[in-house]
Amino acid sequence: DGGITQSPKYLFRKEGQNVTLSCEQNLNHDAMYWYRQDPGQGLRLIYYSQIVNDFQKGDIAEGYSVSREKKESFPLTVTSAQKNPTAFYLCASSTVDGTNQPQHFGDGTRLSIL
Amino acid sequence: AQSVTQPDIHITVSEGASLELRCNYSYGATPYLFWYVQSPGQGLQLLLKYFSGDTLVQGIKGFEAEFKRSQSSFNLRKPSVHWSDAAEYFCAVVSSGGYQKVTFGTGTKLQVIP
Image 1 (cartoon, each protein chain N blue to C red):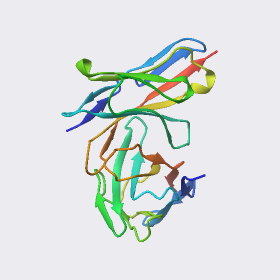
Image 2: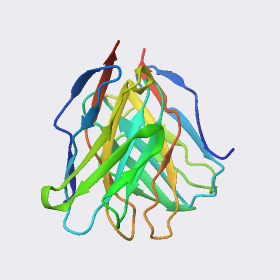
Image 3: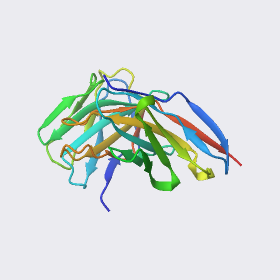
Image 4: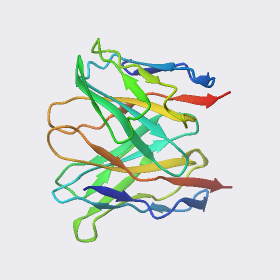
């Protein structure tokens, strides 16, 4: 079955350390997204990419970086500049055919600070 | 700017009782609306979507939602709640055309008591 795989499920970061969250999809979707979820705040968009080798900042991009070298993959790096990285991170994908089909989500990665 | 309001942070219902979760949106054009469900530690699963046409939309797991343009609402309903429905529910609005900007509500957490 097609879907989105996020890994790892749990991740711990030390002070001053960069960590990378993996997101892979086999849905043949052109667009991919990263969201951050905090209790009581819903989902907030970090970065999105509509095509390989192109990505745009979302609403809360500071302290994060991404790459999109392959259609299937959209890794997110949480840098040491992100002072409050503890959150649940969700990756999503969708088509970009203009029909606004819903996004499909992975099962998330929970990042905590040691 | 588009926005979504879910006025109820937490709702408790008895198993077998009916359920209605409220969602109000703000969007200048015809909205594309979704309801998602999230179990603890999991990603978001699409329950149903509204694009146009019939204002009463049927979804998975026995859920339905009614689009009311005059009230800018898209409330989710279920006639008889099961214990397995306990989860967090998110309403979302998507901008039509171009980049798929999704705005999520802050979520309603549903507790089901026996």
